[in-house]
Length: 135
Image 1 (tube, rainbow, N blue to C red):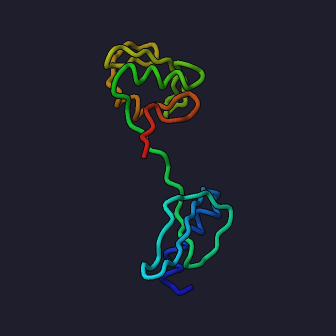
Image 2 (cartoon, rainbow, N blue to C red; image 1 turned 120 degrees about the vertical axis):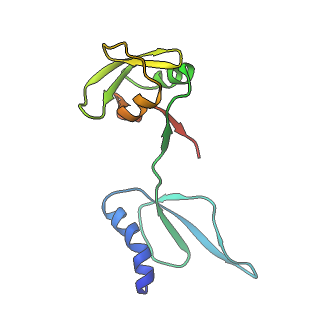
Image 3 (cartoon, rainbow, N blue to C red; image 1 turned 30 degrees about the horizontal axis):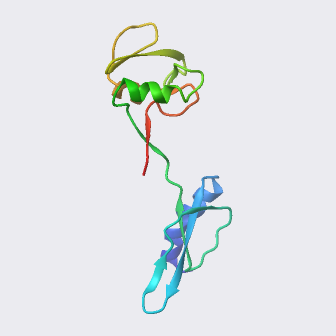
């Protein structure tokens, strides 16, 4: 391993030591084609520094605000306790009411677009108050 390889590998090693999920995929040498990557990333419990392995820190899932009340309602049904969100600032639990393209949270009936709660609240179970974006 040279210094440049160490610089590239160091963030992976540090994340591994911190308990983050590391994924790897293998490369194989094919005659007249050079290095070819496997397209599948798999979780690994062991790191080996070799030319045949490529590593990455598992990407965090991405979320977006709800687009409408139907999408909000469908996702709310997957989280328990149903209809409750947690404030990111105070950790207080508040009840959600979907009103058409708007949403009201807590005892206030102030309607918000879905962007405000996405930025301000999580579901009670800790997941973001939005839809997971499939990649």
